[in-house]
Length: 229
Image 1 (cartoon, rainbow, N blue to C red):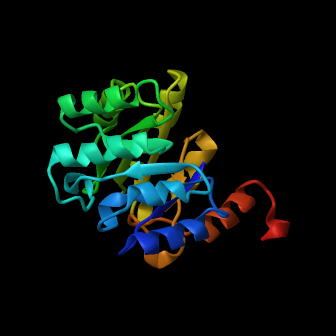
Image 2: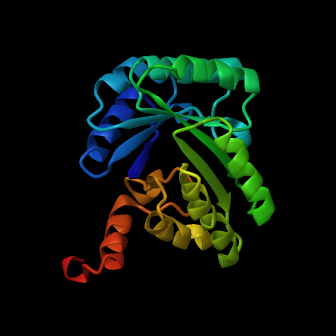
């Protein structure tokens, strides 16, 4: 599943980007922490493909400036308005996570439990612990993303994909940064549930993120369809 993150200075701008993204991707991610005054009801009513709603905390590279209860309340509202997925950090206070899971119970919205490290890539043992911690949230998808300082960092993160799949857990796992680009290409081939690509280079939501055009071209090459490139 290729997902295009959507951020903009206004709700109108986000709607315009959603319209551009819908024919190109399998889903979009509404980064409401980077859409000032985001009108969730409007944004979800005009969607033309599945939507992930993310309200990323500053501790994991996001832009939300309110309180933690306010941040989770926005995700609960998104779920009630029809979001397909909500992304909540594994490090979120357990009581708030429980409140979110309760709100999701019985509804169509599904949980993505995520963990990000913008400073580097920890040991394989630490990453496996994070995988288990995310799985403990009973999510539809686990998302684990680190920053690669070397190619070997990508290998440690990509190893999480078969490990999770063996336990029946859908996962998105890859590395950020220039040295992490290869992991963004390889992750879907290993079974990663989601890969993220920007509408264009200026709109990348994380370091090393490929554009949707670049990713599509690379996917065709990897699949052997070079005649179409």
